[in-house]
Image 1: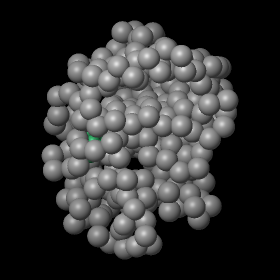
Image 2: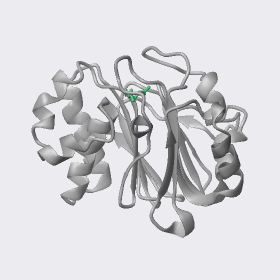
Image 3: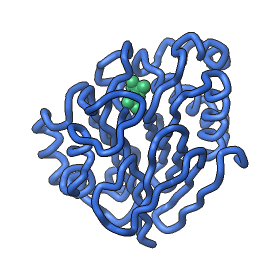
Length: 248
Ligand code: GLN
């Protein structure tokens, strides 16, 4: 199952965030420490999105292992940002392996990622998909559960629903329609990040000036703590709140 992270804080290079730590996302792509629900490595794609000079995000996504792409390593060394969302992907059996299936998914300032699986996909999603404009269904980034989850979250954001509520409502409705789904979502606009924990691990490290939310701690810093299952986290670089999803 995929691994993802979001960083908010003082400028950091993509290299510092994705490549240098001992258990970095790069390492998690071939030796994750905490895989659940099948899958052993995360080699079906990767993606990173960041906000150059605080402006709208730029993405780099590929349907290949992160370790096999020399370009991202070169880019990462010279690219720094105050907000980054990145993921490495282990495709769920039967789902497309294409660039567009790799997170982050994006619109405007939003970047989004999903770690997990929607049970009974795609049939279980028919009632929820029916709430979306047909155009959204025809223009999904890829034929995957994650792309559909993004369409459901985005539909709420477009309607003006706040980020935390958009994530909570989507998780709750998908969990009801497809019980047993794993729904760890990550959403950021470059200033605030929202994460859900439903069926997968998520760890948090807040220093007071920066925050990292990641599927796995990327080093042995004692500042990491695990977010319990069934929770929502909302964080800026300096303030973190966490509460049970049922109270959302
Ligand atoms: N089910 C999603 C996909 O195939 C996410 C996979 C994951 O978390 N491993 O893209």
